[in-house]
Length: 342
Picture 1 (cartoon, rainbow, N blue to C red):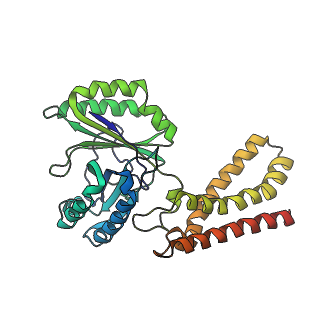
Picture 2 (spheres, helix red, strand yellow):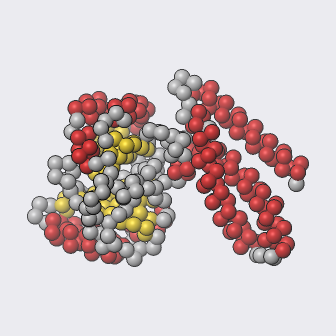
Picture 3 (spheres, rainbow, N blue to C red):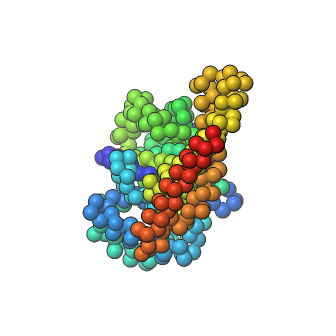
């Protein structure tokens, strides 16, 4: 049985397996683990679930071994399920949370809001912890009893094939954890959404998936992508993420003066008049500089506008209007200044 759903994850788990897809070897240094939960919420209960998850974050943050939690609500059509990423200092800490009375009580309260069953997986993080990736696919597979060895041999085969896929940045494979999860979990990291989709839809992969069908009961695939929100992580503690329109406004606040000043001070006098570079080349160099500088400046400006990205409950409308007015006034001031100076 196949069920394909798509979700966006703020900090997707990165790959640390071998190139052939073999599970990572254990080291003496402690490794953090992440619980990845994907759940389908009734559309009319999305706001209730968001409040419920916010309350849950208050419980989990005091749990032994807890490090951080990230929550991504649906954003159709790319994102269908809610995705919760919970990071713990060790596998034992994660297992204690999964079996805790606190978690069971919280789950009972959310049951009326959900459709179907949750998918819960535990994956080991890299030595440096979770790291952002442009786009990842989280694939979980339920293998038929007695076919595990055949499935592992097949997994090595598809890992070798996908190692040649355009844009692949890493691959991680996790076997089941007795008493915690029954599925095998594979996490693929690609540089772009297009390259990931190209591999997932390729005839070679489809043939390999069909080859594994006799070995498996269930197969679930979800996409986890990151965008501007990777620049806003430090300004948004806990499980929230900024609304897309707020992220866009702050990115524009930094991007506009960078592009304008680079064009006036570097692009026209140096790249165009002095070096006589073709427009396409000069534009590309300007984009490179803009992306690099924006990546440094946006996290800083996000910290300054933390009060607006995550307004105090009860003052949301007032603070949203205030922040929006400040940004619009700043846009206008910059345009006026550039017109007068240049």
